[in-house]
Image (cartoon, rainbow, N blue to C red):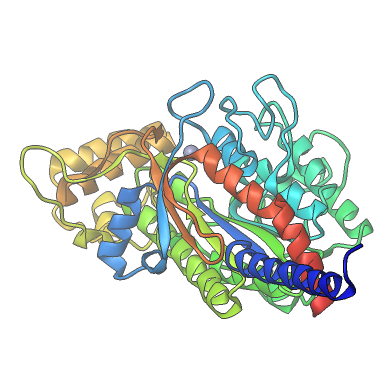
Length: 450
Ligand SMILES: [Zn+2]
């Protein structure tokens, strides 16, 4: 028989052991498991895009991160990814084929980090400056074989239970026959949103007044305006970010928020260097908003990355080692808007001087622009204007499409990670941080203690 004293000390030691291991677990969990995760994706944002923005705008919020690295981008069936396959990698941790939204190459649905966050009782939000049904945001809440099925993607968003939805792309939510609708059926998804309790906001001032979730704000029929052309009634990406954080911050189990700078890609497709800089700067302002919150909060992981780089943006070309970005400061409208002015018949020389600060156009350049404007082909006009500016800055685009190099990865806060990773490893890491047993035990413990 064990003497009473020995047994008493045995029990005390065991309790002490349990308490210390619990305490050490708590320290580890607290330092490594974020309560909130904000994933920010600069669509098409390569390292040259960031470098050029820093040269013209000065220090960036992206310079403040404590950890990071690079992420590879290739998809399951192409060395150059599209946003669907790359978004799937970031949202699910799995490679798939270009064009596929969060399904495997053999079309099985893959669980997304947003779905995992919801299962764990967390708040969720999706923000984009593109269409909310565009590939990158869709990868977090929808599953389809083809990214072009935006009617179906819109339906899936209504049923996904996302608390905060802000961006562009009303047209796939409007009943066919109504003005601006692109739906092919008679579903009225705006009404569906209302029926299940969403507050609908349609401009910046309504968004700023929103005080609780669920809320949906789709501010434009298609993509939101390019930053260079943005109208006062459209919120900036930083304003959307601030509002989403404000609405989600009260959630007891924390929140997962995905923010896409969706139009960096579009300006790079247009080979519009000043436009790229404006979009990256606006995205960086949103990063500043997220980072300020994370600094004060201390329980939020902020991840900044890209799905791929677009345009093959190169700072310098040819045999001489130089580039000069100063001219880009003169740009006051996007190539898209500029091309529409030329197609309306505006004078080529006067317009280039007024909007891009180019006063030394050669007769040969004027003729080239005049010829391409007559074709009325937007992309061709943009490419010619891009060439005229490149000649003076030595900042060039090598493609109007995506390219295959690795993209930046920046992380800040509890659970910050880095290294040279595959994009699926980024998705897997977010997945583990949101799904991990540690998180569940930790949040249950905190619930009891607080
Ligand atoms: Zn693209």
